[in-house]
Image (cartoon, rainbow, N blue to C red):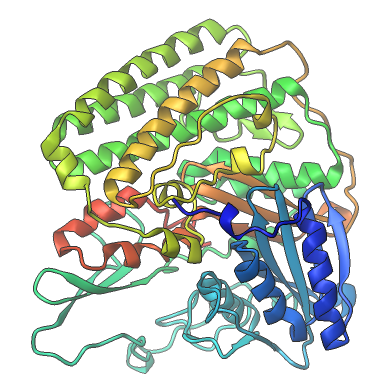
Length: 546
């Protein structure tokens, strides 16, 4: 297990200790850093590019705070420059340090931190594509969002870009080949897979470099269905943005809308009624177990264990049936709303929900016993697709992927939101990092979620289910909404514009982080292992290709 505590500063109040150390850096560089505390646990540190790498070293290496998000905001209309937001999260003291760095239009570049903080790789390339700001000394400054036929594309997330029509694509012969890693050896060859796949899934390209059957390198390329989600949000009101958040990824509908609501409610300083918060927890956990059962069924199916696959698929159907029983929708769309929930979904259905949850719990316990006594099944999972703890930390692998590799971190526990801190529930983690660990953590977590839902229902009290938000939110206020989706940490940063519009909506789903981890887990495994390893991560293309 990765031990965060071993790297912490001795000070009881880490924030104060870090601020003292930042002051020393400012004295050395003769600069100033403005400190703004917002929304309870967000500490914004406004500094310059001169201090960026020093601050990153202090937070990420000295204090071992993972880089959990990095994005850009076009604030030229507000203060005359772009702003980069680097988020480092302290998982033991429930706080987020956000370094903000201004970038002027006259000097559209910034120092890359990828060489010392690998998790920054995709974020910096994303900023390069969407804002035309160059990360200097980036070790792999290739296109991330726009590739293939997308040539001479505009930096779409700049406010000056208002034409959202698709530009004409060049002739195929004019499209340069993507940079690929090659090994000049007669014993090494490459297997390209995708971007179009045989199954009914979204596109993604996988290029395996193999020596016989063992995989010695995997290159992935996503963003074939970039939807322009964040640009679309800038044309919307706060209320319209809620409906957009539900459509980011179909099987994370509630988790995404929950995060969006949390951010907007922080800005509005809204006190969501207790019954609404309890209902949100029940629906969020219900979405979680449905996702987990689907993944468990897929893992069993990829090992040809059809009995276990059928059992977990039956459990998934039981979860869908409960969702339909409570809300009349399987995917929980439009059950949430700003300020609470859309209706009192539990009223008069408490007993029926408890009976269905108890039936699900019995099946989980029975199926777990069967799985744990199937030695051939377990042998297929163990030592397959290992993601080591240090790699998981460096890439900020989150959710099941991180917890199965020893990162004892769950947003519901470490950065509790809503009223999760009022309930006791187990947060499971293992430290081998293989498919077996990801299977078992997911299975244990599903059982904990069922028990949590039963506890919440047992303590339900009558009350209001929503509270109206103010007619107008304060312009240019901002906040994070962070939830634990089935796949992991889900971060939504929202800035309000004039007249209750969205100025900037940055979405970072867990899949964005965890896709970087898959090639490391695949290395040294056999080509036939890839479907099983990939299913054990179960990452979303839609949640990545925003």
